[in-house]
Image 1: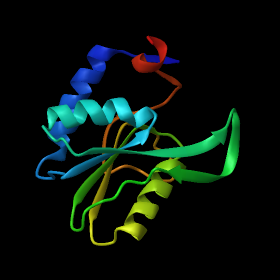
Image 2: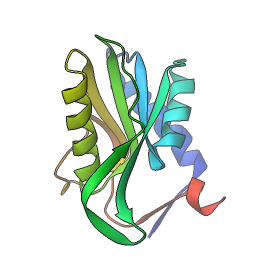
Image 3: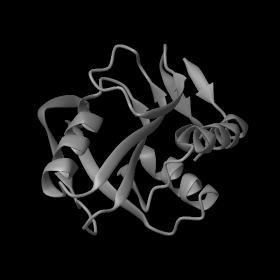
Length: 145
């Protein structure tokens, strides 16, 4: 188990922002719940007020669903550059479903994905990522509530 501290998070926001390079999103879509803290801090760092969220439900309690339910999908203006963020890409299923759905609904917009953590074994690897996950992570926003 790895405890991800706030000071590491602040450093990773900086690292992630530098990775974006020339990619300047118009909108950040944070996947709730894990991606919301990341999305908020990143939007502050990028001075970007267009921060949207969507909900992804992959579990009923502790039981993994056969499908992924997406709710509260935001309206994306045409020809937007959109960065979809989450705290971790574990299996890759959620990010894949979110990206596929948004690209289908808004084919005229440019979508990129980002995560603080990812697993190399995931079925979907984000465009931008900071750390590889090799064990269970306890995020400060879950543990220190």
